[in-house]
Image (cartoon, rainbow, N blue to C red; front, side, top):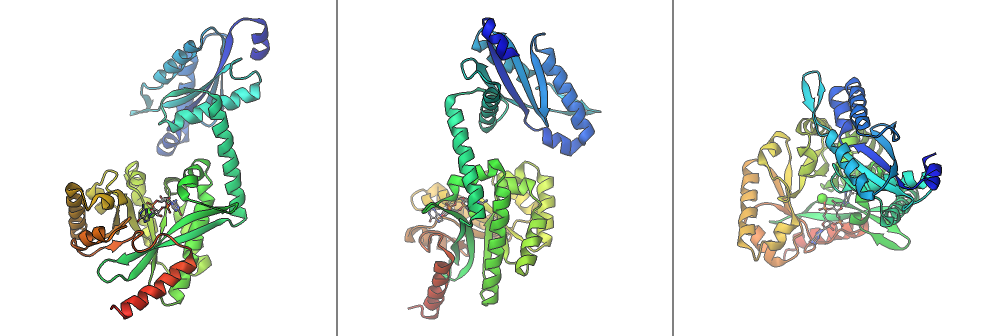
Length: 412
Ligand code: C2E
Ligand code: CA
C-alpha cells in the first residue's frame, strides 16, 4: 500500500530493519518470560517514536521492521534511526535486575533503492547485516555493493554446502616438534577446501562458514576426520597428539561434548589424544560458561591449547582457572624475536611463567634457524612452522614422520 501511495504522492518511504544485539543472552540468562517482557517494552519504546502513519511489525525473534511514510529527506531517516537506537540504550528491568540491550539497524529507501517490496526488505536486511558486522549498535544504509556482497556470500555458502556433500574438504597436518630432539610429537589439523581445481585456504572460508552456521557441520566433519586419523596413528603405534581448531561459534553454540563423544565412538578413539585450540576471546565473554564447557570436555579427555597467545588479553589468572594445558605463542612474536629485543623479552617471560604454571608451550610460525636458536635458549618447548614443515596432506605428513625418525636414529 505504501509503495502504491508513493506513486501518487511526493516523498519517499524508508524501511528500517532492526535487530536486538544481545537478545539471546537475555533469554538465556533470565528466561523466556523476561525475554517476552523485554520485547514488549522494546516495541513500546520504538512505537512511541513513530508518527501515526508509520508501521511497525515484529518479524519474529528479535527482529523488527519499521516502515516510514512520506519521508522528505534521506537524512531524516538517519535521525530516526539514531533516536530508535538511543531509546533502547536506557536500562531495562527484570524485577530488581537492570540490564541493557543495543540494536543494529539496516535502512533502505524507496524509490532510490528499489520499488518492489520483496527487494526492499532484502536490502534492509543486507544493510542490517552490515551494521552487525561493523560491531553492532549502529545503523547502515543499503548500497548496491552490499547486494553484490550478499550475492557472493550466498553463492559461496551454497558452494561450501555442496562441497561438504561432495567431500571437497580435506585436513592438512602440520607437525609439532620437540625443540630439544626434533621429535614429532603432534600435529595440528588445518582444513583445506579443494574446489574446482583450486586449494582454498581457511582464511577465505572459515569466517563465512561461521556467519552462515555452516561451521557447525564443517566442524563436525573436521572433528570426525581428525579423530579417525588419530585412531589410525594410535593403531600404528605412534604416540601423536592431534589438535583441532575450534571456532567461536562452535564453542558457544554447539554441543561439543555430544559431538566429541559421537566422533570418538564412531572412530573408536581413546581419549587423551585430542587437543582443542581455542582463543582468549572465546572464553573472555562468559568465563563461567567457558568453565562449564571446558570442564565437560576435559572429563572426556580433551586437552586445551590457547591459540594465538599474546595477541589478546594474555591474562594468566584465568588460564589457571580454566585448566589450559598449553599456550601457542602467536607467530607475530616469533617473527620479531630475532630483531626486536622487547619482543624477545616478552616471549622469554611468557615461557618462564608458563613453566611455573606447568603449561606446555608451542612457538608458532618458526621459519628460520635464527628464530630456532633464540627459542632454544629459552628451554623446553614445542615448535611449529615452515622451518620444520608447512601443513601437508596426510601421506606427506607420514613421510615426514618416517624421515624424522630416521634422522633421530642416525643423528649425524
Ligand atoms: P591458526 O590456528 O593460527 O593456524 C596456523 C596458521 O599458520 C596456518 O594457516 C598455517 O599454515 C600457518 N603457518 C604455520 N607455520 C607457519 C610459518 O612458519 N609461517 C607462516 N607465515 N605461517 C605459518 P592456515 O592453515 O591458512 O589457517 C589459518 C587459520 O584458519 C588458522 O589459524 C585457524 O584459525 C583457521 N583454521 C584452519 N583450520 C581450521 C579448522 O579446521 N577449523 C577452524 N575452526 N579453523 C581453522
Ligand atoms: Ca591453531
